[in-house]
Length: 240
Image (cartoon, rainbow, N blue to C red):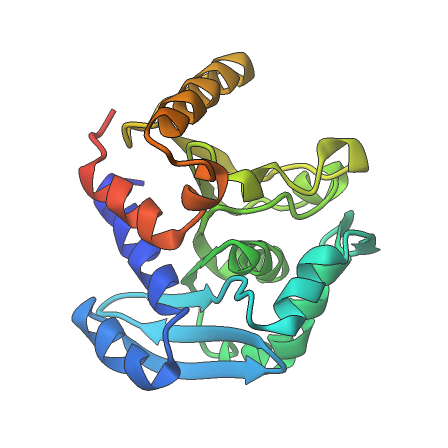
């Protein structure tokens, strides 16, 4: 998927955080209209219609939403429909709005699915449940969602974008049995996509943290997780 396409989905994911009263015009500026807004007990998502495609976008963690914080903290695993197990908290959030989403997708044959942070985790679980309908899954700052069996049971095309030192992409920990899914799209300190080995990424992130600390930026792991900073880097990323 090209940089310009990733940027559009990043902008959609960012707008999904907006006040619903403001989101209509923001989505319209990108060429999308709202088909339906799902909002139950803090779990939120939009179904959008573009000129030639639908997009299902999930809202990520908002620290002012108690349900979001609790969902992130529930790190146990539960059996998922496609196979394997997923994070209990992430599954609980998607389940709140899943019946409504299923109903809305009855007459839709193909769509893109996206989200950031908790929204990325919800998007991954959602995509696993409607695999035949998913054109592609695009996530930003996604935590690990499920175990190895779950990962091996999801066959959708998945572009998993990580902004350099984003700390959320490192949890829940591998030692707890969680694994990442999808094609890893890693952006380095300069906003360039790099296909690096694990050791090379560790070195790149260490270098980035040292540079950030020299600039007085002590919390680069949090800073790099912000959706706005994903968008900033995607706007200047060079195609590899």
